[in-house]
Image (cartoon, rainbow, N blue to C red; front, side, top):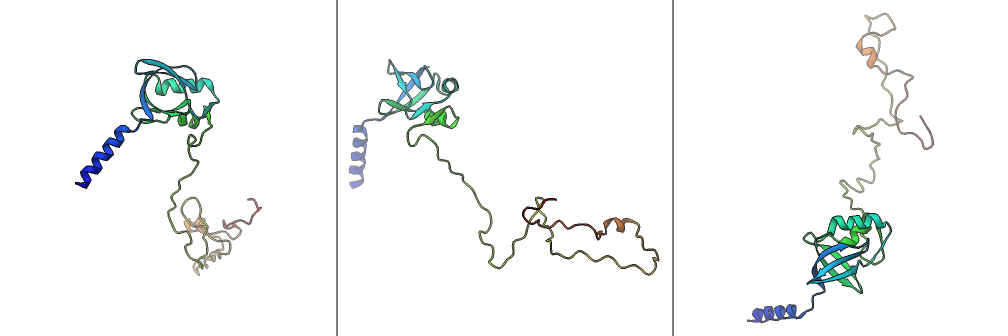
Length: 188
């Protein structure tokens, strides 16, 4: 019984509250900040709230493209209005600011400048683990202190000191530099 009384009370209070927003039809775009609407048979000119137009031509074309001859919901903010396109609720005042055709003059018009980042991994992988440098290919680099491989010993069958064949091209040369991390300020 208490639930029924609560539901009836809420329904009656919702009917008695004045609606702050109205659905209207856009008739024409006058300029980058002013539109003409059809409010139940009455043509009215309204200005967009919270924006200062910086690029008049592009703002007017964006309004024609987005809300020209469309249904919009108007939310009053003093003498001006906040405009939301129907049915997708595109916030037209904010869209002008985001595209760079206007500057926001009210709080809530300009979107938050926050970068959402997802970090995959550990923040502190271990206190005693030494950081390892990585190349862009996904393979680990050799450190500058890593020893170079020792040259292969001569086989007793090969009296010459010159190597030949495919093994000679793979063998490291003693004068080759390692590709370890560079100290700051040095160049290659």
